[in-house]
Length: 247
Image 1 (tube, rainbow, N blue to C red):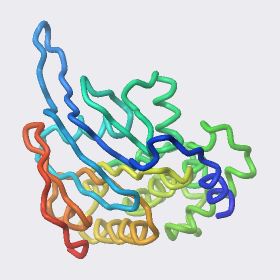
Image 2 (tube, helix red, strand yellow; image 1 turned 45 degrees about the vertical axis):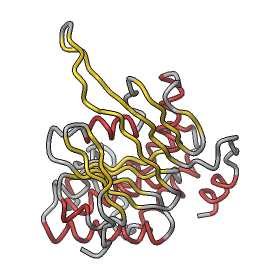
Image 3 (cartoon, one colour; image 1 turned 180 degrees about the horizontal axis):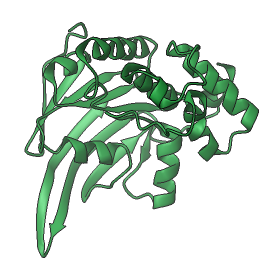
Image 4 (tube, helix red, strand yellow; image 1 turned 60 degrees about the vertical axis):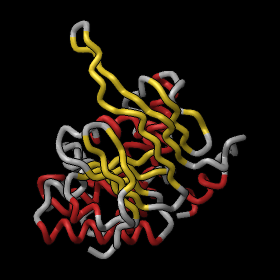
């Protein structure tokens, strides 16, 4: 994976590079007519490079709003967000789009593969948006599909893949840009129990390789697969106990 490693080494440093990930007093409110409705209340959270964290909470707890802020899909009403030593909250929409493409790998509950593209072309998509040339895109996509065990499914379309295989393609797509952070939203929510376990085993392998992962879930048994857990209820985040990583 020479291209990926070379790219990682080329990343510039920052005067706040000692802080990998931090949320400090994050609040988020939405307007409902003339009324401001608070959703997140003074969320503070720090993460070291190479950690595997789960954020667990029931529906309506605020975890999706929190995920959107971490993933630069939304911005906080107040507070500070640092990623890879850089302040995120005051960026323009164009800058947030660049951060999403270069710093964050997204894995959603439904794999969100484009049905008219085969597995390889789906994995190539983030590189297309980055302007990487065709030959290099193809090589890097193939490397990632090998990594997730789908070397024999590269030219299969979504309807030719099982749910677990589709999610592995989504993981390969998230990895292909060598992101600073992997952000997974209910990654096993659409899978049967056996397939879900297989996907979680892949997350464990990625963690063992040194990847930094935040997993959002409502399922405490899935959350315990991580190595640290926090809870969110009614927009308030509390530190959980250390997860066992072997559930």
